[in-house]
Length: 392
Image (tube, rainbow, N blue to C red; front, side, top):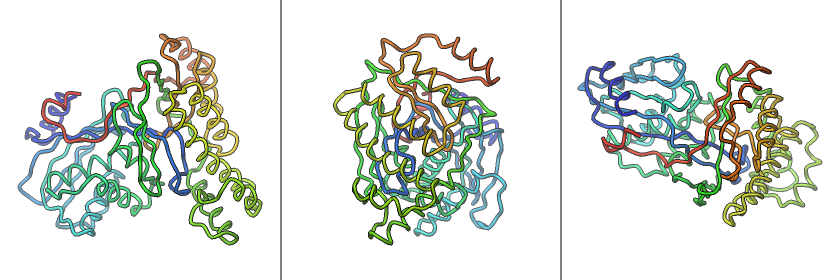
């Protein structure tokens, strides 16, 4: 990766890079809707993600070479004139970061040439916005010598993305990108930002990932509607019990007050998100105890709720999960990777299929879509890389 990144940077900017950075792709394994509920999530980072190489400029411009989504593009941000319009969402996100830093009294004044590429093992068109935001703010913090700690980087990146109002941003993936650890699953309370790194027994268990290559299946769902529904449920119930989030309700209180939610679909979304919190808590305990059979069972229960209540799965994803279960998976679930979807299956290492080519061929024959199936390696959080480390 180091060689390709350097060559790309030099071919674009005609200067060798002086610094390298890495931000992993983030996977939200359990707990969607937790940001609205102020609840708990289980998440992890991959060994794959986004890389950046940086060289200095003498003017007040930041040139971004984006070579990881759909097509390679180079854009210029004028630090003197920040009121430009940008057609590229990632450039708008980067500009939102600069404005957020300026709002917080940190003046971005270093002219930079930045090349951003994804790991060769990742599909090039994943919507890795949380990773991009954490990578970009790390570059700006380091190159401008702001000295911001990781929690401030997370908050600023999350707030800048939220301020842009183009994505349903969640702090869980930004936080995970910063604080995850290799071969661990992170349990995060999104209300307090207290977290725990729980070891994953990779010696005896395997996480398999399945990604449907683009053009991917469109999930029959609108996440915006679901987030709005959770907020509406909170507002409705708060008329009868003073709360800021559904997670503040006890099990009995929720079951008693949920009748106040009159819209049937809103109630379904709320039931999934509320009871998902119990599943997240239980799954974390199973991981601590090393009970991977029950951890897999919780993944399966959660997937059933996604399908029946939350409605973000579909017949194609359900078929993949069914096939994984038939090949010996302890559990499987549709998860979020950035702002895309990935299916994760949990296996005992001894039962992990060595060859899923028949599975892939059957799927292609039925749906005319290719699958990308491979073991999921859990990696470390974001970092500034020494020159010899950017070869990862």
